[in-house]
Length: 121
Image 1 (tube, rainbow, N blue to C red):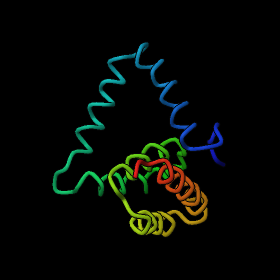
Image 2: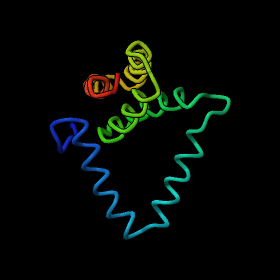
Image 3: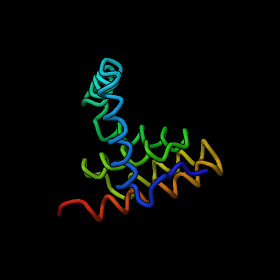
């Protein structure tokens, strides 16, 4: 079942960000720790940041997390991921996760299309 509380991924990521800001105010050490871990895990190393975000997208599909799909897809579009790269990663997610991953991969393509259309040229 989809967890989309909004009609678009842009709306979903904005709503989640707003709610996280409340947590940031109430439990700042936890949110800072999460953000620090995110930055450390995402930096270029043996794998590029884009490759790591593609992995995160596949994990988001496997975890059935639409908000995660939204945030990672937004980053992938910013990093210049192509439709073909995204689709190959989603193909692996579907292979490993079956039908439920197919449904969330369809959601992920909707997010790709939405964020790509909104990206500056």
